[in-house]
Every structure is written in structure tokens, then in C-alpha cells.
Image 1: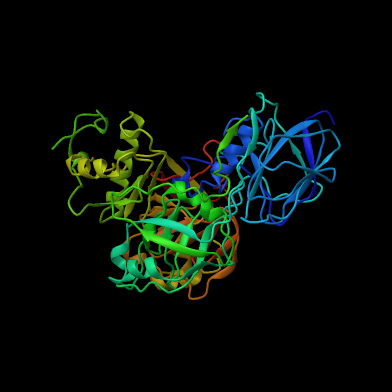
Image 2 (image 1 turned 60 degrees about the vertical axis):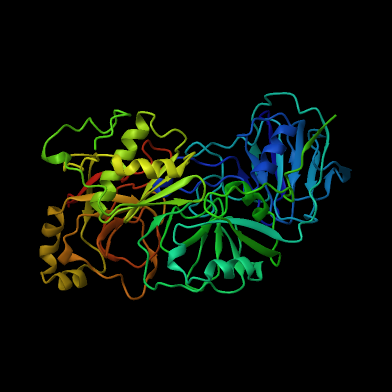
Length: 307
Length: 230
């Protein structure tokens, strides 16, 4: 086989192909999808000389192993994990040369949830509606990886970044999520935003690419009845009948009928992508019109150090 | 009250069809930092507002907006630099009422063989054999999509023909099922669980991401159902 490719030796718990996602199709019921930790996805691409829109692999906790069908350069970012090439330790957060036939392996994440693997040239599966991302809600894009799969790679398009190493993200003690109130905060009891702010929430095990589910105090409603289905945005904090807020991530449904008490700004969702079940969640309601301050506790948001 | 800065929304002519249906009762609420949810009172107003937003985007008046999502009583505009600015501008728009001939027409050939057909006919107070003729007369419009890619919520069902959902949803509704619930009709693009009343089925491919357009029924399309030959 002369086409550049990798073969999947171990698929891991849930490994999907992801890029920047599908834009402009939500009116047809198509979620955006795309890498949950976009800064980590972009960084991995930069490390191997790819443009941002090249497709990477997003792993979930358990890593993966692929055999290189050609000589290639790879880079691993996002959740920190041991990286090995043919059993020998290799760098996390830096370009790694993998010879044809060698096995690149990511061990279990030491912290965080999702690691990203970029290959020079990007994963070259056929795009669907302009994106190679797997959307787990509607089933668009390539199926999650399975052992024995062959993934085509694109043609390398540039030199790898001149980089020694990337700062490894620390272990965040808690997930801090700023929330812009609305559009349906008036559907909740007066003290609901306060409950959201001071409640002891934790990341629930049922969290996935569709939403970060939480355990904690229920948010009481002021209004009963149903809200006619309305458009949903990335980061919407939707409150189903059990009262436990769900933060919508990339594969979220495009419309929904449960009220949204607030919205987490998109640039703060990478941290949600890396928060393990049980991690304390602190919601910080903002004044409407206030601007969220950036924080740097996000796996994958480490700065690239010039060599 | 005519907003002339963009030149949009003027291509549909003048006369009875262009009566402004907004902004009486309209409410706009920011959603996060980049989106605006505009709430109106009827699905016709949703269609009018959605059409106007599409026209304005087409002439470059909504830079950055990548998603305009109509729904039951709202239109979501996502990708705005300044949602408040659009909210302030909206009340000054003159928005033409959608005309009956607007939007592409889709004819869906179907068989009236759904498991709930007899029950639906009974609720409607007609004989099962009369249902196809009645259904064929209705001109539907795709109000919005959701639930699954390519699933359109079709409005147009007369008020007295509205139906409740089934008390117990089916665990598997076959792809191509033509179904009714509340004020809506719809066609399942793929098999899935569902609580709508099934009156028939079609071989039409509702959703094919490799086709252009991927969705047979996109918001704004007019839809008529016809009995399949044989």
C-alpha cells in the first residue's frame, strides 16, 4: 500500500476523528461536532506543520496504538499521557518521528480526559458536509476507531513547528465555568442562579461529547410547562426536568425544549472537555455584558515555547 | 419604518403580501456572547423573520453569522459580534410576510399504510379511506428542522386535525415513516425511537449528506404529499 496511512492496533475506549467541525448546518438539525478541546487540537496540528482544520484523533482516557504505514511525524497534546514509539518513551507535546512499521502508542491519560494525536498531512478520511469530524449525536462522519481500521493520511503541507516542547497542563482542582445568564433564566426560581453559583456540583459519569452532565443541587423552576423547541448554542447550560444542569458540548442537539439558564462562553469549554467525572464544578454567573477573564488551567492550552 | 441600509428584503415586491408582521410582540434575548434568540408569536412570524435574516445575510449584512436556526416560536442567530446591536436594530426592520409561492416545492410520494392510520382517522371523524384525500389537500411548509439531521417539522395541519403524541413512544420507527404529532407532520429520515402517530411511509430519501442539498426538507420548503403509484 503506497498511500500514506496508519493502521489501528488498539482503538482505546472511544477514539474519534475530529477537526474544527461543521458550521452552518444547524438549521438542518446537524450539530457542529469537532474537537472538544480545540486549543489542544490546534496545537497538535501546529506541532506537525498542519493547518488548524486538519483532522486529528481524539482519544478518551485510555489512549490508543497505531502502526505507521509510512514514515510520519506525529504530535500528542491535550490530556497528558505516556507516549511510546515501539515501546520506547517519546515526547508528549512535541513532534515525534515515527518510521514506517513502527507503533505509536498513547497510554492512559494521567489526568484530563481527551488527548489529541496529529499526523503530518492530517487524517484524510472523506469529509461529510465540509468536515471529517465524527458527530456522536447524529452519526455523521467516520465511525469511532476500531482495531484493524486503516486511516488514510493527507499529504504533509509544511515543515513541523520549530518547537522544543510544550508546557504540560497542570491538574485542575476544579472546573470553573463562567455563565452568561439567559435566555431562559426567567423560567427558574429567583434563587436558582445563586444555587448554581454556590451549589457543590460535580462532573457526572454520564458526561460525553454531547454534554457535560452534573450532579448537585437541582435548580428549581418558577414556571412549569413546556418550552416550544428552540435553537441551542454550544455552551448552553440546559436544565432538564431533574434540575441538574447540563453544559452542551460540540455534539449537542441543535434544538431543545428544556430551558437554558445561561451559556458558558465557547473559549471556556476546553476545560470542560478535560474534566473527569467527580471533578468539582464551580459555575460563576456573570453580569450580562461582562467579559470572562481567561484562565490557564486548561489541558492543551499550554504555550508553545520557542526553541 | 423601512430599514434601507442593507437593501435586503426588497426583492419580494409590494402589495398585500408584504405587510409587516413584525415586530409586534417580538422579543430578542442575547444567548451567551455571540447569539441572539428572537422570539415571536406564530410560526408564520418565524418564517417571515427567518426569510428576512437569510436575505440580509445573503447581501452581507450579517457578517460572521454562520448559523440561523428557526424553531417553533424563535429564530436563533449565532456568530454575531454584537447581539445587542442586532436586538436594537430589529424593531426598525420591515419584514415581508412569506408568500404562498415562496420556497422550493417538494412533492413526497407516500403509501398510506401506517399502523396508526385507523386511529388517526377515528380522531378526525372520517373513514380511513377518506384520510389520503384529505391529507393530499394540505400544503405543508417546513417550519424548522431538529431531532435528527433532515427531520423537518412541517406546519400547515388545520387546527382541528391536531393530534396528541402516542402515550407510549415506539422504540423503533422505520425510516421513511410519515408521522403526525401536535401541530406538526414529519417524515423520519432514519429509523429511531419516536412518539408520533404513523399514517404512512415513503421511499423518498430525506437525508443524504453526499447529495446537494443533503436535506430534502429544509426550512422554508413547501411540501405536498401524494399517493405513490400503486
